[in-house]
Length: 496
Image (tube, rainbow, N blue to C red; front, side, top):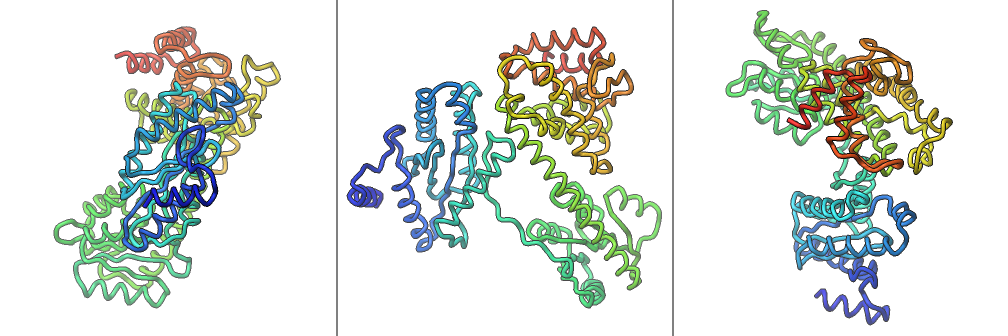
């Protein structure tokens, strides 16, 4: 069938169906193949995956290396794609520096694995000078999209990969439907049917949508598939009790913002403490007073919405930080590496959980202030002028001001954003802080930040070896610029 489509295409357009440079299929014939696969899916439900592979900052690569090197790189990427897909799959040069693949009868997990291999190989052959971002759209299940919808999904996933810092694979996921304020969804969990009916009778007249579960595992299964605004959870259930269900909910990044009210006949201090340790947001004693139930339900749903709003704002900040990093080809991946290294250092140093969270969040946001630094300064070849250096030195303060409205949420992470370029001897910026004036997380971040900067390519110099970088960090610690304890910890961790 593919041969017939190819022959028909070439006869119709009076031209080859292959791209002259890469030898892959061209855009026109690929679109024909995609249309055929969609129709085949509608008839026989045979799944497939569409992937877009886009070379990051290819215009910049061409300007620096010339068009010939650019064309050679396109041919190399085409070769990598061909080597990593099966004979039954299809690859094309979709347009410019974008490639497309059709992975036949592929699962989402399998497709991600294949494209991760392509992404890693592209990074390898270019010596990290060039990377690719990938967006995937899966056609499976009861999916009946048109070609334009599938292309839009793959394109949206590709945009997400770019926004999240480039050099990554993103799988398109449909956003869950949101529940309106007037129809909040409450789940009640109890092994006694009568208790379920009583709670439901109190909540339905208020306009809430009520979902019922009669055991812990069923409740967790529902939570994995359904958006819930509040959980009323019985404690004394056979098998998995309410404390364990609550603990699992609060330990999940996806579920922890859902308020949990433990409903229990137990009124002793010991059980209340266990409920608090499990992460419960509130308690009601059986049988619950109707007015108290309504008041606490309304209050916690309001709290949940406020927390969601704050989480959304934090996610915007993280996306903005990644977008800022994407402007600087030399620091792509920097915030992720620095955050992970700082957290590893913090754990080795035995800092508190609060400080570890400050390192994780602060590491992701520490360079967000560079949004105020012009791209030509960020990517300047050679040393900065005094005026340019003054602009660059203001980025911690700019970042602090951007994040300041979330001070209550970010807490010590805000110190990391502002203080990560401060020095123990007062020679840093922006506030020339000294010694204990600099927070512990900021001192750790400073060391992690310097190490990553020294060991990666920058516009003004090539990356150093780890031994040379550690020697410089040791010297700075000896001269009182860096926290000696943190520097020694890093040296021990890198060269155990």
